[in-house]
Image (cartoon, rainbow, N blue to C red):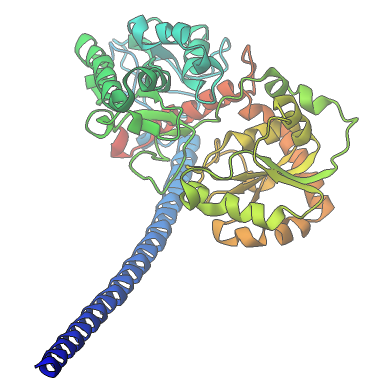
Length: 475
């Protein structure tokens, strides 16, 4: 009897072991299939991304070609592309005779003369901007409560508004305005709401934007006239218009001023209508050029970076680029690539940057970085590592002459790429930077050639295409 029990127990044990092995085998097979599936999905995503980037580049080139053709036709005075008469008393089908369109028919005799697009000697520009008189809760109250917003890199929402308020570009007559500016400090409001409301901050910010838009739409006739196409919003943060969750439904056709010129995010940034602006560097030593004028220092640092490397987001942050660069460069004696430390304050940071030949600008959570503009203000050559980035003024500045751009896939070759750049090329890039660095500096007060005036010049280009182009988008 004992022997039979022993055999039965042995049989049961063997059965259990076999069953366990079968279960493990099945799970192992499923795991293999799961990881194979993940790899297939990742490969499809990579292929789709490459396909989209190729398509985006094709669209960009086609758009650039079309814009060039519009500009050429306008310069030749093509009647078909002449601007419509801006005089409210003239029939809408009448055209203005302007120096740039000498073949255009003039207004009928019963109409008062049409205004021309000649440069205003007071402003140096050909357009006017009307600023909506929104309640102070949308702008100046926030500035007073949140001092940080004035000097933050997102402070362009405040700086542009204040510059426009005192600019001769401003008009108090909305009927003569080419553009309408909506003064709203969204990033500043969100910063305050994050402190007050925590997880409800974005929802509260969305309602706040809707409240401002409701005033613009219901209390004035100008928004509905063009569905907001000639209205300007400043979105100074990396999230762009997404700070206003309902932006697609409400303001998709408006002009956005934003530092995030990421073409891969086609919905939030449109090269045709939107403008890339430099982030705000409020430190006077940077924007005044004071750090550039003293040439008594040696550039004894070959390449420089101080900033966040190990973020709680792990390798998702900076797509892992900063972690790779730290590993690659830590043993190079003439290169500084390190986290910020208490023993090197802002004064130390500026001193090291101005001693450097190259300033490394790897992407963070998003492609753009204030570091590239700081570098230009001290005469350091920005080394950009962000595939999707678009810089300000790309229609007029050749950024290849001002920077070194390293594709994200080539980050492991950073050292050999930089070491291989001839000294003559380095000197040439410095000379090019010297010509244009003020275009990324928000000087105070604003001066011709600085960031504010350069952004306004970009806006003037939008006006030209809006008024001159035969594209139905602007009609």
